[in-house]
Image (tube, rainbow, N blue to C red; front, side, top):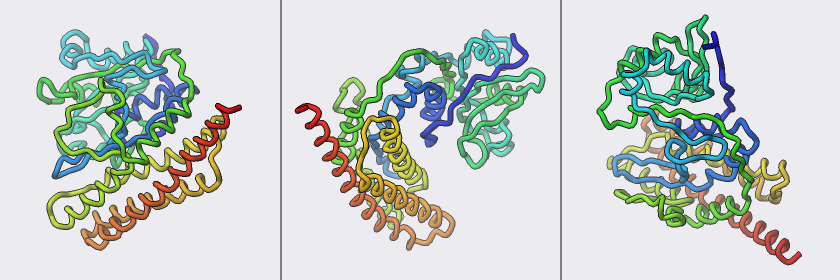
Length: 345
């Protein structure tokens, strides 16, 4: 084995979920991977679990489905690694030497820089992309200080303890380690697919019926597309009545969704795919600003527990929905006119 090796990582566009950011940081190393990223992550859905809500991007997960630019995902059970490998450290070094990124789970009680370090046991994922035998440390990405996505280093001994001492039930998802490696599979940017997703989003239509193979049995109510804003307003009203609790995470994803849309619009123009009007570009920048204000109000509420901030959020969510709905209709109309001219000419 080499004394050290570090596999490259890109900065992911989306950092709200580990299963998205880890895969995205690898596939975005190639231009085709960036094409794939900006061709997707348009549709949102929100699950209403009653006491909590869960906001999601509607797209298959890289740990379950093959993505362009990744050579599938290999899964290895934790007990197999513990049984057949000399150590977790040796397993990781062996994998990285063969150009596999190691996406695994550890007990954060042993991981410096995390909120749970020396405080409580909590299983969470990290992705290891390099090692240094001289310094006896791994190069990792994960959700460390203040649970923010970042790259850092982790001592071999801490990684070994975090992996071997983690205690979870037999069928728990944290018992799986995923190995990612790059492939030469290409992808062509798909403007029409973006607009199809945007149609579903703007009209609050469910997208799971497009491919019934991916359709899940729904055990709780779903909100789709721009309708997630309606769902958030209703959950905030329930929150004020003491019937539920809405934390900051769905509002962070809402903001991230608007930021990504602005970067997508710029990317499409810069790469000659499609140029939207100044009104659309200005409109989505204003939509991002509105989403940022709403997140700020949520953070103020969490610090003060004053319901007046929730009231302001409900009102501003209505303004956000109206502005985004109008801007999306402009985008769809502009693309439809362009597509019609292309077919006629």
